[in-house]
View 1: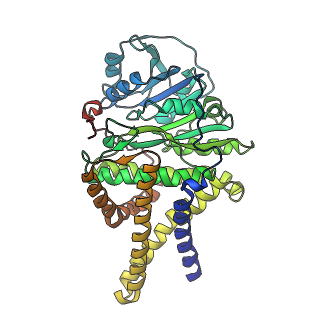
View 2 (view 1 turned 45 degrees about the vertical axis):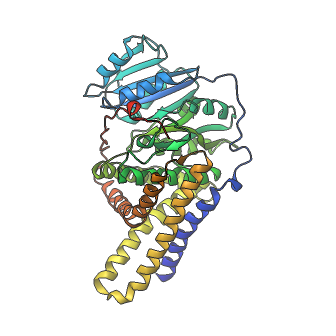
View 3 (view 1 turned 90 degrees about the vertical axis):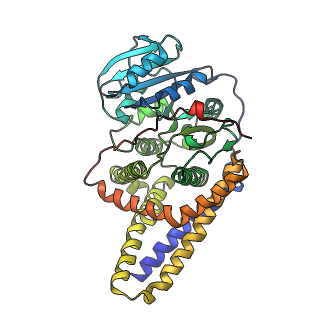
Length: 453
């Protein structure tokens, strides 16, 4: 038992250390970050599934009509909304009926109507029966007309350069899918490719901002270099439509983003040199929960999705655990050194607290606390530094103070709350697979963006 715990602890140290080093520019792939401007614009279909998004859809439409890329279409998929989402789209876009034929390759719920905007002819609205986000995306793929598919959440805003980065990157025929960089919408400034602001946010949003910097600029950068990126964020993903179709489209599940990424990994495992990458230069912003209740819903759903895919892809993982990096990192890092280690550590602490005097486990607690402090501090500081490397910084001096306070909040409070999310979500998966939608704030981010001094 002691040997097992030592091995588990070493794994818990090994993987964070590995990613901290591997995300550094020294370990860049030969072609990573090299961008050759391609004059010919590839056709891009942007799919935006909407279910009860009346509070945010105006912000999304304003963002889409402002993009300067010349060869794209936008398809809003109204997935049986019960609020005023469809009415809002009618009002914002001045819709008229439109007819076109679907591909008839992916299954989805009945499509009631298809509309085209009179004001912005490249924007369409697909009105369908409710079937969930995966079903809505399948319907969008069916009616899309371009070779590249970008999937966004309804609250995602793309920066103007994002589609050009996608266009240039997908000149490489071996790239079949990519994840874009997702920043926090509440931190967006008037210079969205340079500055983030913590001044208008509460502590919960600030700590999630750090969370995203760590997840994208450290973990995703490192994992993509290992060809083991297991999650293309649903907030901003890019795919070749042909690959989405060949992989079978989206499965109706609680975590469509992780599921489609792993489905594509399974599909391209039969081909040499095909790859899924991370694009830190293609930037979007998405809204994050502002209260603990909504954060709990979101993070529990993420953990349920992780467990669901662990079971669904168990055969693929079993066959490729050694031969494919994505399987190794998913099972050994995310499950064994992640979920399983969380349960074991929690059980050990509880048992010792009940049956042993405090003096017998005081050293373990102090050692574990020291380990958490050092690694958490290193991760946070590295994430901020890597953000700066990719062009993002917190501009005002006052924000540096907020940032320091947020780092300590993350180390001493937030990370222990996330342990509860993992514990609860792993068990809840077996009893309740509901989506548990997070509410949008309804804030008008176009008006809320002020100049950066």
